Length: 354
Ligand SMILES: NC(=O)c1ccc[n+]([C@@H]2O[C@H](COP(=O)([O-])OP(=O)(O)OC[C@H]3O[C@@H](n4cnc5c(N)ncnc54)[C@H](O)[C@@H]3O)[C@@H](O)[C@H]2O)c1
Image 1: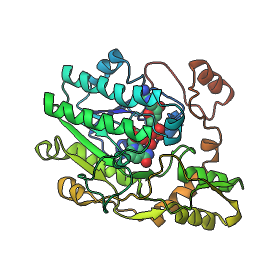
Image 2: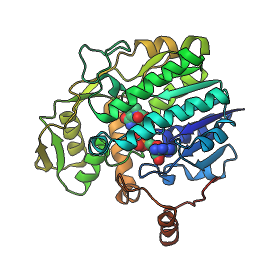
Image 3: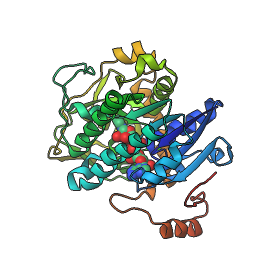
């Protein structure tokens, strides 16, 4: 049985991955290492996981060398997702983005030098490319990050690559495009618009809404991660692989679809000036993922969006109490929540939950 260390596993993409793999692949053991920042949420895990002997949750910070070494010692594979992820926050306050996204990645890579793993998968981001100069965007597209968040992802992406070259660490770099699905914080576009529309609040639409992205449902991302974990290492070590659908959809179109699906009026749209660091156009070339991972997205955007909207409709409890950056939850706060909201908090200990 192989052990996968998932950093940032209590966040959006990580928790979807963990929930799927525990349900579908009995041959893996999962350790989640997560600092439980405002973006990490124990409610993201399926309740059954807590009694699954193949699941272990450890609260810890990837910036902490000792914690990281302790956890990497037990791992065959590292799936490194932990990061500060919200572009707007990075514009307001970049320090924590540099510390977690770049320094934290260095700590993990160094730990792998000391305690070798079979493979280290760095989950980078399509944001490293900036706006498309040519489409579809291949892995050779110039890297022109346009926000501090994207800058830190680019730094870590290239740092991971340099450890492959310099120390022959078995690094694989995946560059997912925009993910959506259950458990995504309401600071991000689709959950923001769905939750606001449900409450008849205005939807802040930046610019003319023509900015487009390549949208990928987290179930498709899960399948791509599995392929990267199981691919022949000689084929994928040192490679950069886009994880995208190859289809672009504009923010204006998504807004219309959400309003239409929820039966809400277009008057809820609140036009705002263009976002600083805006990326205008973005969609993936999917060729390399097909040839190296035998993977391509399967969930059409219309279908995935409907499933996602339904999830937010049915899980108001989950999103109505989310916290926001930079306030981090303290242990005292978490315990207070456990006492006052027993149905919502599953439990909390500093080192390990099972
Ligand atoms: N969401 C997307 O559309 C998208 C697209 C491309 C790439 N990515 C990348 O995928 C990864 C996961 O993204 P997400 O959307 O799930 O993010 P998220 O913000 O939902 O989750 C991030 C998780 O990392 C944890 N974390 C933050 N700092 C930490 C630290 N110092 N130590 C340990 N844990 C820490 C948080 O508690 C949280 O659980 C990130 O690296 C992100 O850059 C995301």
